[in-house]
Length: 212
Image (cartoon, rainbow, N blue to C red; front, side, top):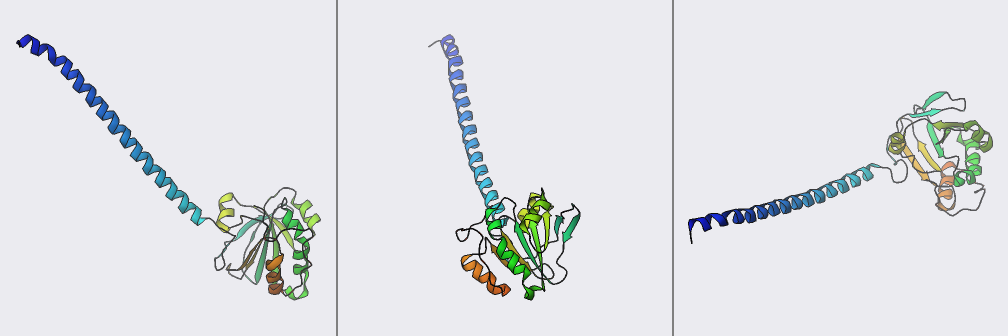
């Protein structure tokens, strides 16, 4: 074989080697991309689980401490519900919640009972619109205010479903949490706690129903 023929073959061998290198690099990059994607998916999954674990599952937790709740009155005046003295009953409702409306007779009966002077009832409506109209229609015998806070605060304190009843001791410590309309076993427990006979729901509903 002549020197010329050997030299003539080298360009072809180099091109073959170069294409193999390019293929190898491409495969390596593809593999690295897949590994990174798998890692990112796992990381996002862990982040979501961690975030979900922080969110309230059924309203505030018994024993937790609630911060002051920013609200607005029916006249649009800004206030805060502070838990400085006595026991406060937060009744969290939505104007569009059918179960809240069905439960109005129960909450009126409990709040009007003579032996409940030690409790300070507050209806916290999640929507600020037409608050005075709602207050007039519901005829609740205690202050009706609207929540004046962002979604982060609402999630942090656990106002995630309605109707929600939270009994808060002085200092903001949560004593009782009832999620849902006051019927069935829940209604019996609430009636016993407040020592009041409940008239029952104003409409027929299934036990445990909650609007979210």
